[in-house]
Length: 88
Image (cartoon, rainbow, N blue to C red; front, side, top):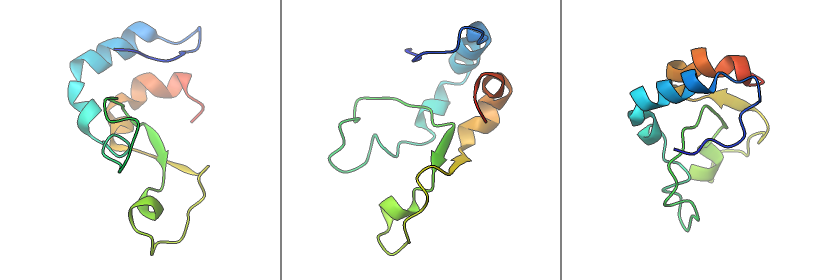
């Protein structure tokens, strides 16, 4: 497991324990992993917040604000551990 740059004050032990206890979180959303011609096919990711995916999946949907993110399902499971160290 590789976590990129947690803040110094982050409760890394609790976050790592929560991830270890919930490996299914890596399979909740495989948007980029399964995206056509992706470079991320071998990358397992847990999405906590992400912009609206509908414009990428359906060209009939108007483009959304790429900076407006919404909680993903994993945030419900990890939010208690993550929110203190995230900006959300």
